[in-house]
Length: 264
Ligand SMILES: NS(=O)(=O)c1ccc(O)c(NC(=O)NCCCCO)c1
Ligand SMILES: [Zn+2]
Image 1: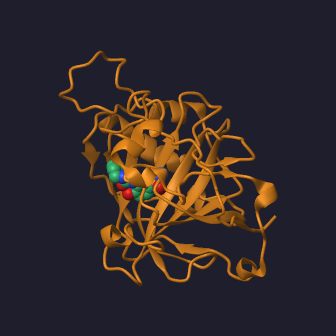
Image 2: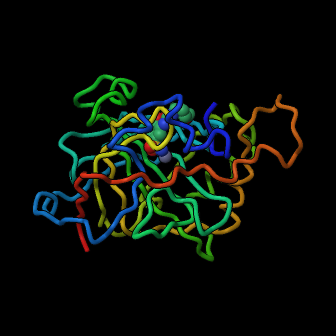
């Protein structure tokens, strides 16, 4: 199966997942000198609403942790989006050391981690699965995470559940109240471009919105992410083996795609 090690990592994905070799792949390096700030975005602020009780399950996918959400009362609109999208799940990507880990980079700079809030176009399509096969099917918000001294209190609610899902396939049906506002940066300034899922099957179905301002996470909190395992409990391996110390895809060429920005 695919993964992030030398023998099953991003450079091998196209063998089994041909879309991974497409011209609209994600992530990309955000070359800020290439970003255009045309008027089409300036008066269309990106808007979201997430009830605090919409998270109901955290699962170890073998590729990281993922929080599944009830999308009914959620909404993401505005900015580059022409329809209202509903929150499906959110998850994170990180590296083995703090100088890597984000998927998007900014002028070649990596952040320590990157949070993805995954939404689907429920106005045009009848399911997440159907939307994931459409060019405007998904809208993912990318939030850079940099190391700070303080713990991120909202992330702590997620981190406290990680010890229950150390092995692939484990989940915790904890419905936990999250203030999503503090998982998003204060500034709504962002870059946006058309891209793909950053993991196999790498469908080219995502309208990406990457916020310019990072949020902070503590080193201790990031270490907890790295304690997750990519193998199941039944896989008899050495205790230190199978750790998910990194799960990010390096950037792909932007090619002739347009990169737009909103806000300085
Ligand atoms: N990183 S991303 O672009 O925001 C992203 C958003 C939604 C997704 O569905 C995937 N990929 C995915 O589900 N792959 C199936 C096997 C993984 C097990 O969970 C990636
Ligand atoms: Zn992701």
